[in-house]
Length: 276
Image 1 (cartoon, rainbow, N blue to C red):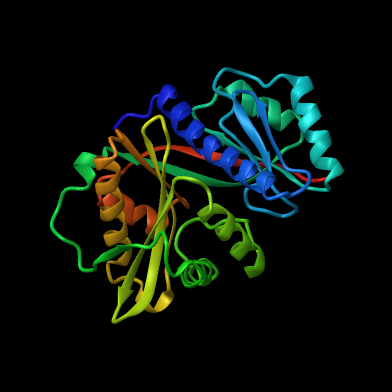
Image 2: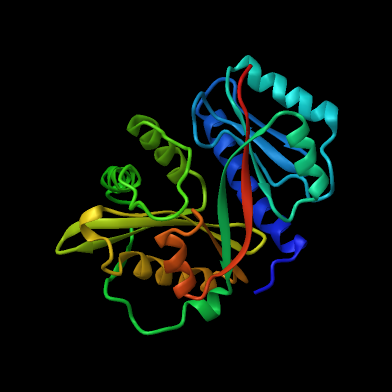
């Protein structure tokens, strides 16, 4: 699969749509000072102080950002004493990266974006575990499992600078799973919840595979492979022409995805402007 600029734009737009949905959910629940504003073809989203959903994504594919609009967003983030995080695709215009560098943004990390044709990637023999759709039951247990697994990384890959306390991670998962269209999946081993994952299908035919994690005691036993295959099959049934997963560079998650037919499409640079 070849990653053109237009494909990267479409994938980043799907994630921007998900961020906007999270903001609208928070606004509908009466959360004060939320924001989902257009910026450079993407979106700047803010949910609450310290939330993982506070970021800018989907921008820069048409060239440098309008300076006045960027300054206005930066000022609003400064008033909140919140670092402004930009997730900039390597297929965005190079002038955009230069613009952020000139404004003092710091490169914090990278993340890889992988994609696959769901119809091709979902093929293969049955996996070792049965996958359950968990949309309407065991919500709290599922969230606890994913949070505990995220807080115990497997030590592979380039790592990340993000470090969220468990309470914030729980709150973020609760909000993410409440977004319209989000689907949850789980795997049990010997009756015990071993791991889970989620997926959201964008109206433009992009399946976003997200929120996947396995508890340490059940890793290296095919749990994530089973979750990948189940989501790919549902993405294919829903008519998606691409499924996307985001991983840390060089991680076991990336290896699992590539073994299931995913190709590395592009990366995103995580650029941060610290609060003044």
